[in-house]
Image 1 (tube, rainbow, N blue to C red):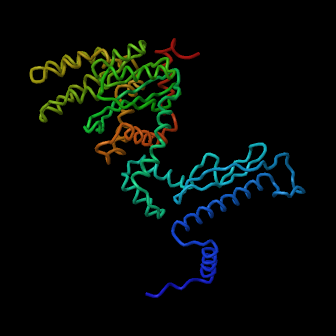
Image 2: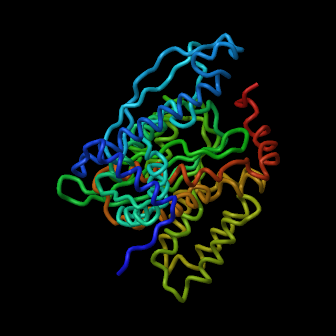
Image 3: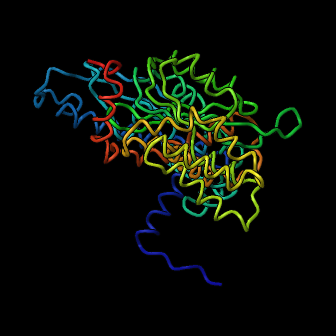
Length: 412
C-alpha cells in the first residue's frame, strides 16, 4: 500500500519535527515523552505570560504603555499532572494578586481535568468502569485503567464527607426518611447494608438531601444516630417526619425531636397489608382499604376500618390489627387539609429519589467497600438534584396551613 500524499503544510511541519528530534538527541520513546513535557511547559508558560500582558495592558519592559498601578511580581512554580508524567510550569504573578489565568486555572493540577470531569459524570450516571474506559478511548484516544477510574472517583470521598457534615437549616417543614439496601463486600463476605436517606423540605418549599449514611441493617437505633447527627448540624425543629413503620422509629424521632408530628407512609402500610393476600382477593381487599385511607376525616376512616374488619378478618385477621396497632402514626394526616395530606401521607418524594439511585447503581450487584458505595451514591445524588431548582408549585397553600398548625414554632 502506498503512503498517503501529504500537503505542503504537512511536509513543512514534518521537516521541522525531524529537525527538532535530531537537534534534541531523541533516541527513544522516553526521550519523546520528555520532549513532549517540555513542549507542554513552553506552551503553558507562553500562554500564561500573554494572559498577564492582556490583564495588565502592557508587555514586559513596555513601561510607556503602562496604565495601571499593578505590575508583574515574578513567578511561582506549579506541578501539572499529564498523561506523560509531571510537568513543572512557571506561573506569572501580579503584585495585587488579581491575575486569574484561564489557560491554567488557579486550582487546576492536571491538564486532563476535562477528562476527569467526564469520568465523574459517567460514573454518576451508573456507567461501569469498562464502559468508561471504552468511552474515553473512543472519544479522546486515551487509555484509562480500572485503577485510574478509581483514583479519579476517590477524589470525591473527602468532598462527600464534607457534604455529609455541612451545616443545615434550623427548621424543616417536612423530613422524609427511608432506607435503600445494597450488597457490600466485607472481610471476605457479602453483607446486605442499608443506606439511610433523609430528604428535607425547608420553609421556602425547597427540597434537599440532608444526608446518606451507610449502616449494617435498617434499625431504629441507627435512625436515632442519624437524627442526632441532624441536630448536631443545626436542625432545631422538624414539623412533620414521614417514615416507614419500622419498629421503634417513632420512639427514635420523639427522643430527638419531641414536638415532631409523625406520619407513617400509607404506601408502605398497603404493601405490608397486601403481602400475603391471594391474587383473586387483592382487588376487592385494596378497594376496601382505600375507603380507610382516602376517607374525608379520621372518624369516617375508623368506621371504614370496622367495615373492612367485618369483611376480611376471618380470612386475613392480621391486616386490620396492623392498621389499628399503627393508627396513631398512620392517621396524622387526617388533621391537615388536602394540600398538606398529599405531601405527607406517602414517602413518594424519597421513593422517587431512591428509584433514580437504583437506576444508576443497577450495574453494580456488589460494592467492594462502603466507600465505593458512598462515592457512587454521592455522585448520583449530585446528578439527580441538579434538577431540583425550584420550590413546590403548591407551596404557598401548604405554607399557609403550616402557619396555622405550627404558628408558635415558626421563626419571627
